[in-house]
Length: 353
Ligand code: ADP
Ligand code: MG
Image (cartoon, rainbow, N blue to C red):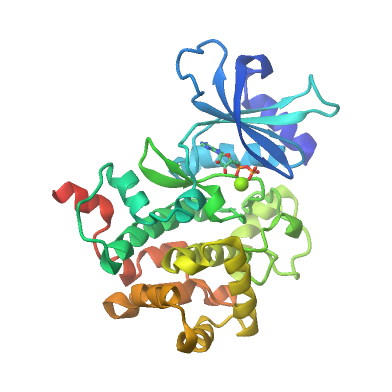
């Protein structure tokens, strides 16, 4: 596969950028499989002092991540951060490392925004571009969260319709694009492209246990290995139907919805504790609610109240996403048609003024 991907990439990418074209700025992140920097082009340092690009130096999964970003750019560009270029950089390290370049979308992820005391009003300001002088309250918070969920599900639907499962959906991998005024996904290092079988064999150690659905594996264990590419193209719609791998992302997106609704579930430790509770309830959210509600803290009660607005359609949507069995979870497309989204979102609100 590496050989295939490499020769494909060589044909695809004319060498328009190389290592020396970039000036490294601030480090933005460091994971197990790569380091991310804010960078600018050496040729035009005046364009932006801080750099208007992002560079990821990736090791093992760099080739897959370049493949996924290229696919996304051609098929569903708005779902993810704007990908500029990717190449194998061989001059420094033995074996080389993959360099991936994106446009710098913005300074904050949904994780940053969610951990602020101002959430979700901080998001409202970013989306509408102005501070709204409206009374704070559950209705308004629900409308903001609804808008965020609509954007996330829209982006997910784009990926899933393309045949890509992200597999690492979490607030840390959702960037707010200041240019587009919407949320976009980043970090396709664990993604799978089922139409061509790229990264088809699940690498369960890539999955983040905090947001992973209980099945852990994307495909059932009855499909042990990837068929060769032509077979995969012929078979994958069938496999997709049988295994519904996209529902893995839906579960993770459901957990983000939960964290947005419940202020007390936004920290890592509280999410881990929630996961333990939910597992004890057999992954049944209704059972979890029954066990929690009698002794619920005001913050927890606030979450239930928010989801119970408008006859409980928020709660209904949440429970249709966070379910034990993948085939009982809603799809991104079906979720977008859910009555929870019948109301106008945030942007329409600001247009009306
Ligand atoms: P990792 O493998 O380290 O998780 P990510 O792709 O998630 O790598 O990127 C790490 C961090 O870099 C993100 O949390 C985000 O803060 C920042 N980042 C990544 N891509 C962009 C982008 N296109 N624009 C702005 N910031 C980005
Ligand atoms: Mg990440």
